Length: 465
Image 1 (tube, rainbow, N blue to C red):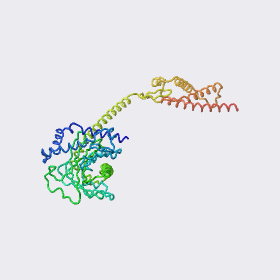
Image 2 (image 1 turned 180 degrees about the vertical axis):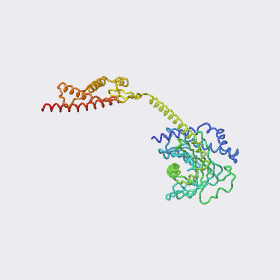
Image 3 (image 1 turned 90 degrees about the vertical axis):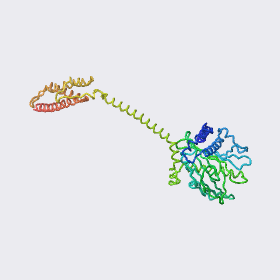
């Protein structure tokens, strides 16, 4: 359902373009063709009038199928009057329709339209290069329907040529061939390319003075074709195509079964093959198609159709880069500002400023310096006070001789000092000054412990005596 809605949108876009004033007004259309053919030396007023009439007729044929989806859903195979289209096949990606000609007319009108997952120049290359038809059209042995020959007989100018296509058809029909005049009309304003396909019997009918170009008819029967197709750009990698043709296959009686076979099998299956070939142009024959795409015709279409897209993409890329650059500059500026903000380390007991440097001379630590450098919590201040008392007590200790008997009061004082030192060892140390003081206190405590053991030993000897 999604694909059908997309195809309906593509169809409405093409119908809107075909109904634009520049393509419906004869004078505007002639002016567009004059601008396109003015560079050709062979162009004159008669040729210009002839091309204008042919293009106007094809545009009218392409517009004849313009209708809403609601109207198209009412079409049935029971329609018999001229001008009523019969839907022969309606798939997600394409639709095949048939319209019977006027009573007594040998022409039968066939139409197929759908989207292509390819750029316009690839779609045009597959349909324009008749010499490469055999590369993508299957050569069926049964039923024997295949392309026997595809040749460009004469290249009039860029975007105009005369070609021969010969094909083998199932028995009891004999081989059919077609001399086709290809003419390309450019309407790049809406991404549209129109290709005329008209059968001719001689070059005079198209205003070409070349002689001995069209070969004599042999065993093949030459059929007539009036029509063409429209290619419109949808996206850089998707196009929409509508092909229409009034065909005279040179039969006195055309049974409905034959038209069903042509519309469903040849036209319907042929469109799928055409879509597949356009989607993989480089894979079919890299050398032949790459050489064909180097023609000025495809180069000019590529430049006209997609140069604006590239410019828009580049502009969007530049804008994106500018936005990213501004964002990076802003982030860098914010980072620079963050680098100038003083960072603080959150410590449970001491908040230390990273930018302040604590420099002390070894061996000289005072409470005043510490209080100037740090913001000290009450617990730490109490621990520092205890440390000061311990240091003073250790410094006032007089060494005890070995033969001196330690009194009970001194033993109690030493025990109190040891308990104070143990309390101090459990206090967290957070700064260089505290580490220095703790180390000094530990050395004093170690010395005091040795003296205490010595005094206890001396006292025990006196008791033994």
